[in-house]
Length: 107
Image (cartoon, rainbow, N blue to C red; front, top):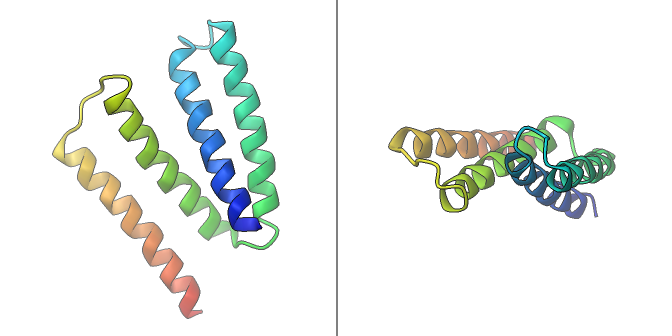
């Protein structure tokens, strides 16, 4: 169940971050409210996930998945640039999460 909490927390964080972009510096009430609600739910679910998932693993997965998803949303929804260096950076983040997870399994 903790892994499900983590996945749903990541989804709420992604929606909240996307809404933050649309909030125009938190000056648009609708998107700003979505930010607050989504981040609140995301942190509660992350806390529930941390009951059984190690914090280093959970946070690494949280940040890598969020970073990769937000980068893709930035490109496809908000028209932001995608460069080779950005792709390499995201790949390195994902590789780091995989190595942490593998090291956790070996422990």
